[in-house]
Image (cartoon, rainbow, N blue to C red; front, side, top):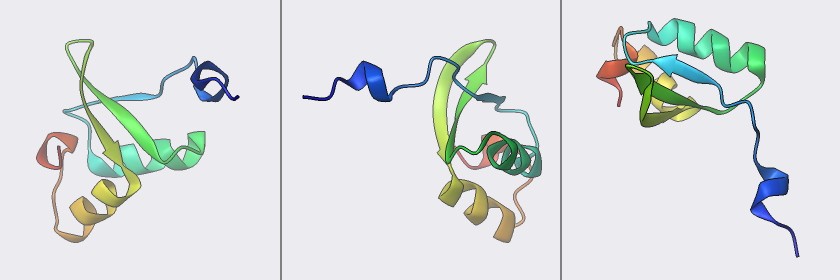
Length: 68
């Protein structure tokens, strides 16, 4: 049996909800991840996926907060 612990990453990649969506896309690309944990004042508030980012970019949204 595979334990969840073995599949999880210890270094969670985060982005501020005030970040630009393009910054989030570049971070996903550079870190080779398909989702980011969104934080506000250091606390997790949401998760954004590649799909969320793409939808935000094509609909001219500017900030991560606009897609969560």
